[in-house]
Image (cartoon, rainbow, N blue to C red; front, side, top):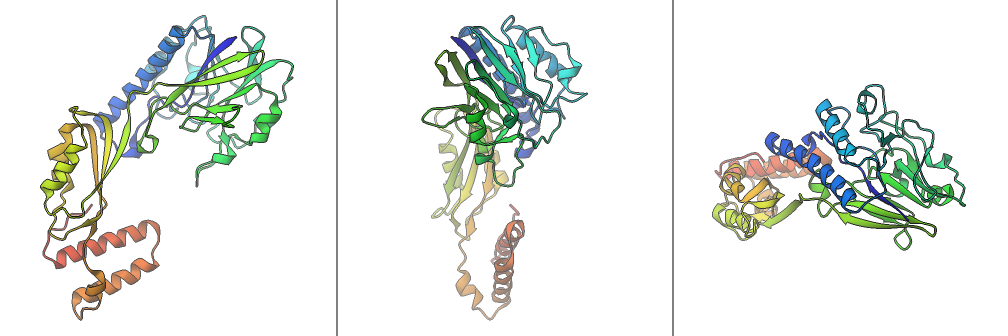
Length: 375
């Protein structure tokens, strides 16, 4: 029996800019990505793993430092003589200036540096076949080129997109179909690219995305994993093992019926729970119909409650409780404003529609003599 620990998509040196995170918290998150790599190596040693596989996007090519590269080297040296097999992805692609070419890697580390499938032999006649990305946008179906002898036990390692699960408006990298997995002859396909754990097909898995071991944003809530793969003469079995320590959490507070900002503040504080500060990274969405007299000052609410949380964001998504149907019938400037804005909102789409809805809200606040605070 050969035991493999598989992980992918750590994204070391990630900027966290896409989630609008404060600079100090982003630095802390980058350190926590290093910590998860240490825990992965610790787990491999504790479980006496025979080999470690990495399904790409280990780091961010455009941001990574030599210091981070040397950190990776030091961690993989701890695993020697166990082999560490890396299939570069679109974010850590194997290109002339990549860390994979600039650093001296330990002898136990093998980097699949070609878009042609290459084998690495493990114990008990098990081999791992892998390929690596050589550009940030590989659109070829490389799995279609893999044809293995089914009489031998082989594992395939690839950073790619299952075309049945490509997110909307996202390009597919190294796309493949389930039929390619079934046809290639591998006992199991270890993957990287998608950031949530997936074992497919569910009834008898042939391939898996372990997901990223630490979440990178609010769209990656919940537990995160590495994969333990046991390979024997009768095939491969996969076991997800939770590895993350940090959780992202989104909470919604309906302000309907609240008449003071104190009530909103108390509702936010209650969601911190008993521990202080709450350990999760939290986004608080204020929703519902806000009474006209309710003063929602996001900056003030954040100042009053932030110390209860490790990291807190507050977003005002409330709708003002104005009776628009009555207002549009008024023979007043306000009535004309409501009619004009509703007509424009009805024709708008996407970001423009959101801007116009906010403009209607701010205008009605001004008509009512309220302080206007842009969201």
